[in-house]
Image (cartoon, rainbow, N blue to C red; front, side, top):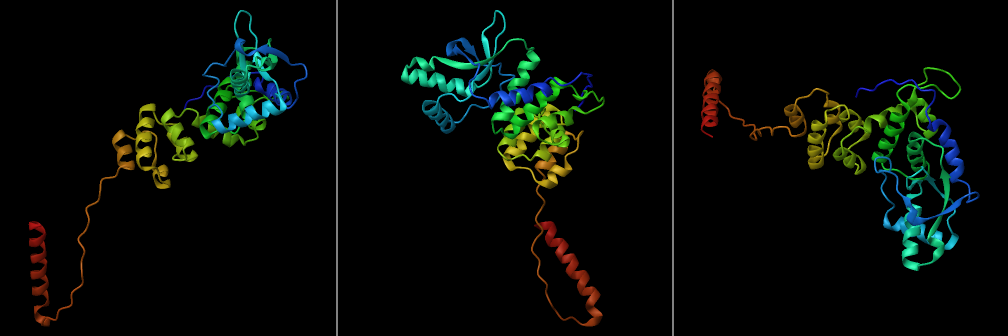
Length: 295
């Protein structure tokens, strides 16, 4: 996967993530209540995260009913545009359901931490960073999160203390509590086709196999996904994956031609005169060959 080098003063999220983590840990002090109908979700290309399952949403709704909203959501106000939710889509959905069911005005508005003087890049990083901090992500969500984070920062960047040549892998690793090698693997996984990402989440595709397949062209990724969905992938098949394989070779790897079954054999013991040994063996060989030819 070809990656371009960019020179940046520092990744935006290097400063935003600690601030964001402190904000989500604080109660509603300084928050402003906004009507829930005035808020729109972040664009799907940023907010690709799955909504809470029904049981978890019910837990969130019950918590809000019993304890109120413990932490405000984070929104972005731009001149002339609807206010966009950056962090707290599930909390907003819980408020909407509560207002729909109860009709209570206290759920018609939701406490918000309002961001105004930020760039679209910073807004996108807040979406990614807040989901990383607050949620348990699937492997595909981790891959897409880190891939977006990496794309925003560029391949090379300067560290926050001014040292040049520090890999963005290591900078993101420090923020997300992973190793630089793990970050590099997730960046690769972020380029997988959706069919393979689904298999990754379902546990049918290992991270190591996914990293290898990320280097394959999209059409071959889809072809591999079809085979893996049907019959899985072994460690031996993973090791045999090579970039540049033809489609036929890929098919043979996952769907090898059935080998002809050898007929069962038995060992016979028969006594023949010693001087007839060679003649008997030749006769037996000829007979077996003749039988094989007519079977």
